Length: 293
Image 1 (cartoon, rainbow, N blue to C red):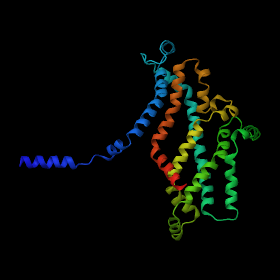
Image 2 (cartoon, rainbow, N blue to C red):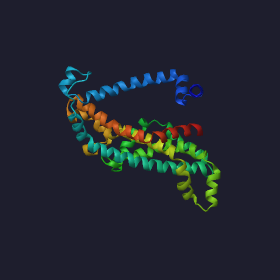
Image 3 (cartoon, rainbow, N blue to C red):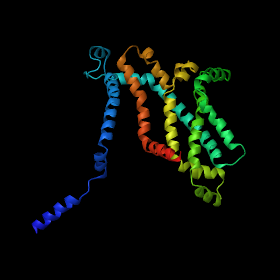
């Protein structure tokens, strides 16, 4: 009996298949090695930034790259106190810009994708042609325009021009996605008595959550990193967005490199959290957009 049990156990071990991830690793080891090396090199600057962020000025001068003790966690607290107002400003601006931009872009894309009217294609390509105009060519004109409208040095100067200039790309992506949605589902909703707005809000938007999440993440990152436009149109320190406040860290905190690095790290953490929260939807939106195109 013992011999039979041992034979069965050995036969089971021989027939047991390795897990799928191990099989993939065996076949794609070169790709994983290349990606691992690239990840390592990408993480080196982040490591040095975090390491310097907990150094005093004297520790940085004597040993700028090595690990020193004690760790100066007060640098993070001081940097947070300098950046907290601008962090709230940027969060508010990014939220309003993202909601308005995606709302307008999704409505326009749905009209271009699902409605038939004379000159639809010509009008769409005329709107799309705005993408081919470099933003730097209209920069001075936009500055004069917002000044004449009385928007200079307000929150709206960082919202309205951004919404007006960013929805074209989102409209282009959403139109391609809406065109690929199954017509049978939309027609079934219409047969059940749903109107145009009900079909859009209850059917189209829920089916488009991955691509909307992708565009939302891209828009938040774009707003989060914008500093040139606020540099020209905002002079009140209380209205500064985060990227502009980081730009002024040296003047606000002196030549203390550790505190500056702590500020840079604090400015990056919200974007990392955002990406980790929406990484699944982000990847799904990219792949679905690739399939549609």
